[in-house]
Length: 159
Picture 1 (tube, rainbow, N blue to C red):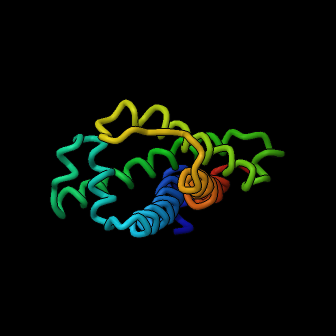
Picture 2: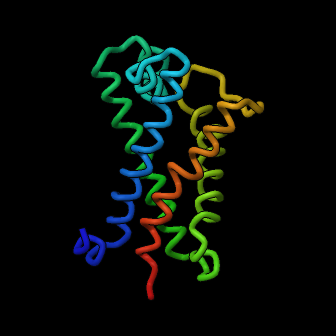
């Protein structure tokens, strides 16, 4: 792993941060789904519905696997963007990973809810009205999703 970070630090940070952040985010989302009475497969089919619309909800295990793939593709995409941003941060801010993760996680949360989901085939309304699940989702985006990406990306900085 150390050699990968040495050879291509941004790729390594993207892969590691995206895998860890994506896994923690998925674990949180599955927990929330189970709490609502849904299954992990239901959640993953809902993820697939962003690309395939309502029909994905009626799919089986293959559709859930596709949702898992989409989830991690998005995680690695966000990790790449966060990695590029962290690499270029001023030293004072780069030394504050919690603050950077709070900013990055909030941006990811808002862009996903206000841009990506409404423009996708996601078949449910997306609201920002205050609720405990919404607050928990926002917090999870800051600390479970973005923080591992920010910490991995700190290795891409010169010096």
